[in-house]
Image (cartoon, rainbow, N blue to C red; front, top):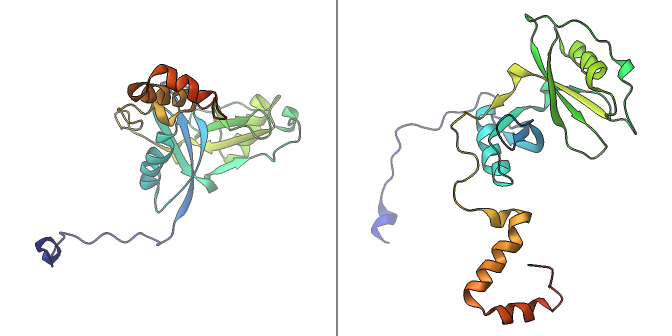
Length: 205
């Protein structure tokens, strides 16, 4: 057996047990640039919200360029049923926001199958009131409205690395064809590449 296999590794501390020992479901949203609205990205399973943010960075931060990520527990949202065409904004009751009430982030879905996009922030004493106000104010021409308490949303830090700094255009649909063509051009003649493209994969790059 090699010496490296014979080493006895010691660790300063044991990994801390999680409070309830179960995984939780979180929803992640990404902002493509500073001051841009957050857009639904997908679900994350994690033992706590801090790890959910880290997982979201590793997973959704690799899918597209983004500058910020929001994460919240699935059960922290309240939303309207998804309408066939559009919801009736008159079904909600508007009211006067009080600054001392909690802040709620409003997400809306324009068409069935679209992603939810951050639309506004309002103040309301509870989730039902927040949803009712969100429907009255932002439900027009939308199929679904969602509200989440702002203090239940965790986010990446301003200086936290999300999108890797090295060239990752090959991961993006818009950069794939250019990246592949460049790599082929480095080892093949232009005439050979053009001839190759005449085959059934001419649309690859």
